[in-house]
Every structure is written in C-alpha cells, then in structure tokens.
Length: 135
Length: 477
Image (tube, rainbow over all chains, first blue to last red; front, side, top):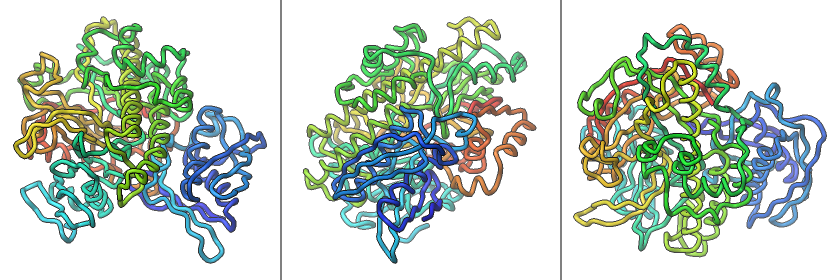
C-alpha cells in the first residue's frame, strides 16, 4: 500500500495504491487526512459511513466527499476505514480521533474532490487511484 | 509556444477550432512572452475543452494568470447563451464567490504604530485556518437570511454601513439565490463558519499604497500614496464547497440525461433552463451571498480592531470595492454585433466593467469599477479600473491574481515556512498563520510575478492600473 504525492501546480494530486478495493478506500481516507491535517489520525473512535455511486469511481468520489463532510462537521481526523463494497455502494466504519489544533495544524483545508483526472485502475495485482484535491 | 497555437497580437494567442475534438468556437488567451515560458499544456487543453460545451458564445477565454486547474483552467472565462447554453460548477469552482475587498483607512504609514499588536489582535478577532470556527451562533433563520441577502443581511445585522452594500459587485447579493437548493449538509458546514477566513491562499493583509499610477481614478476610489489599507481575500467556506460537491454529482447524471458529450467529467453541466441547471444556479447564487456576508463580517471585525487600537471612527474606514472571482452570473453583453443576455462563468477571473456599465455605484460611473488583484504574501497587490476594452473583448473580465507556477510539493522542498517568515520579517512584513506549513505553501516565489500579470492586462487594456499596494502585515488562513 502506498500514498504518493504527484506534481500539480495549483492543487494537490495524489496516487494511492492498495492490494484490494476495500484497502484502497481506507488508504484514500488516510491520504485525504494527510492533506487536510498533515498526518492521519490515530485512536479508535469509530463512526458509521456509507456512500453510493453509479460506478466505482463515482463511489470513491462520494466516499471521499462524505469523509470531508464528516471530518469537518464532527471535528474528526480519521485513521482509516473498514468498508464492504457491494456493487456501486459501500457501508462500514471510519476510525479516528478528535481534531486538535496542536496536533493537526500541519495541513490545509480541502475544498473538494475534483473529477478532473480522477481514475481507478487495476493492474499487476494493485488497485491504483489518482485524485486531485482542491485546496 | 505549443504547437497549433498562433499569435494574434503582442499579448494575444489563439487556439483554433480542432485543437481538441468537438470545439464549437476558438479559444483565446492573453500572455506576455515571459509568462508564456510557464504556460502548462494542461491549462491550454482545459481552455480548449471549455470551447466544446454547448451554447458557448464567441470564445473560450483565459486571462494572463491562466494555469492548470480542474474543469475550466484557472483564469478561464466563458459566456453561454441563455437559450442553448449550459451552466457548470467546473466553471465556478468549489470556492463559490471567492473574492477580494479593499478597505481604506485615513491612517498614513508613519502613523501605523503597534503593528505587531495590530496583527495579533486581528488574528484573534478573525478565526483562521483549518478547523477555524466562528464565535457567532447562527440560527437556521439567520442562515436563510444570509443566503438570500448577502451583504445586505450583514449590514442589517449591524456588521457595516449602508454604503458598503453599494460598494460590492452586484450590490453584494445575487437575487436569483434559492436557499431551498442548498442541502442540509451544506447548511451544517456553513453554520459555524460564518465570519471566518478559511485556509489555503486566503488572507487578511495590512497594506500601504506605495504608488499611484492614475491620479484621477485614485482620487475617486479614495486612495492616496502612503495610505494604510486592508485587503480581505476569502470565499463561501464549507457551505460553498458542499454546494459544489452536491450539485457536481447531480449534474454528472444530468450530463448523461441531456446527452452532452464532454472531454472532462469536472465540466459536468446542464442546460441553463433545465431543473438541474436552475437548482445549481440558485444554490450557487445563495453561496455567493454567503461569501459576501462573510467578507462583510470580517471587515466589520477589522474595523472594530482599528477603531479600538487607533481611535479611527468606524465610518471613516471606507470599502473601496468588493469583487468576486469564482462565480457564474447572468449579464448583458455585446458579441458579434448583437446585444444579448448570457451566463458568464468566471473561474479565477474578475469582472472589470468599464465606465458607464450597469451595476456600478454612481461614484464610479466615469472611472469604471475598481478591480482588485491580490498578490501573495510579500508580493504587491494592485488596484485597477475596468474598461470598455474588457467589455468588448472578454465579456467585461480581467485577471484575478498572480497564478501559481510551483506545486506545493516543490515549494516545501525549496523553502521552509520558518525561512519565509524570517525573510519577510527582514523586509518589515509580519506574517501570522496557524502553522509554518501554511506559510511555505504560499511563499511569494511559488507564484507568477503579479506585476507581470497586471502589466499584461494593462497593456491589452482589459483593465488599467490605478495603484500598487505593498504588504506590511499578513494574516494567513
């Protein structure tokens, strides 16, 4: 599994890879937290999460948008997700800790998850997501 | 320059139909040779992509701060026919009505004592950064008031003066706002963030008017050399971001429903007269109003600090103007000999209405509207005025800022936030931010030189330089 930042002039472009689709969702959640807070959360406070799309890419887009919303309104920094993907929907939990300005001020606000250049491919045993976060 | 692009003037370039499949009109952009060195192929591709959208009128346009964004390029302008055209969140961006306002004070530079204390007080008065929350507890009714009323709501609630309303583009309120199209999620995000600066490139800056280029216009705008001014740059916060996210998803489905072929999913759109298009337009207008109220409240907090610290009467600090640089609006323009109403999308571009245009306060009828171009920490900002050339060439639009030339990854490798802060301190510029990481991301060297971008719009005549302002203190979001 890996999270890598790619070059992008205006925003933040990330490449996330994982051996399974479910793990890709968890790693993508961590990537979003790294951008927003400088590091993913730790700790085990868990919350339910669900999302729907009309294909796997729109499902990932909806999932990340939901985490952005939950993180902001619940004041949570997530450490990862445990989700079950069925068709173009998912259900599961996200875990994390409450936002603390002392620990989580190393990142920047994400305005949204862009559809430009957004793609998921499956090659050589890995699922790979490319995503641009508008900051 | 990239293959296939031709030069049509000293600063004007054309991307012909056929550069990408499906272009309905050519695309044009404005750049000097110096700025052309940093032009990204991805930005030109995005500019050409916009030209494929249904109902586009005249040209797909980009200002000299063009750079690679998502959907439209940043610096992009496009007008769409009300009958055959579309509306797209990709032409507005996530930060709906991100914009800038300039507040003038009667204070002169030598009178700016206690600068560090001023910065600290402003930093405490205006919540900033990731997780920054307002001390204000809005009711659902008040939020509806903001979404419908914008600046007027804020002034009615005691956050400013009646004159402030007229000194905003569109009088700080889009009448087409439809709060019922703003989701509960967007409202939840908007409730605790009213009157907060946000993060990223948003800022509140103490500036000095260093040079005046157009004495007559400067007099009308109320600015003079050596004067202390305050610039506020922010948008519609989480509420606007959520509106974009919500409607992007709806419009992605609508794109398929209306069988619109697009080269980029972020350009998802719907006909302006469709239910989906109308819903996005109403929600976007409501978000724009939230942003105007937001900047009005931040300006109020600023005035209170200045009043308290320097004894300047509240009413002697004047709003010069407030401009939006991420918005879609219905405007009347002439193109190809016809006068028509169009939906102008400006994504990282500023309205630059010339003398005699509608929607200008009486004071500015002969000068054209003030155009405010923010620099970045350490680099100058500019005050310009709108022109008739902009009305003729760019649907009354000009640039919005400097435009990045370096990614955040490169910026962090090159220089630390601490180094940037210390270097600026040596030049007498105090920077206050929630973290040093936020400072490194926005270091002056990561942007195109704002002076060159402004020189190009001045030379082309899309707006004319009135004054240059330099920073003395910066609060970074």
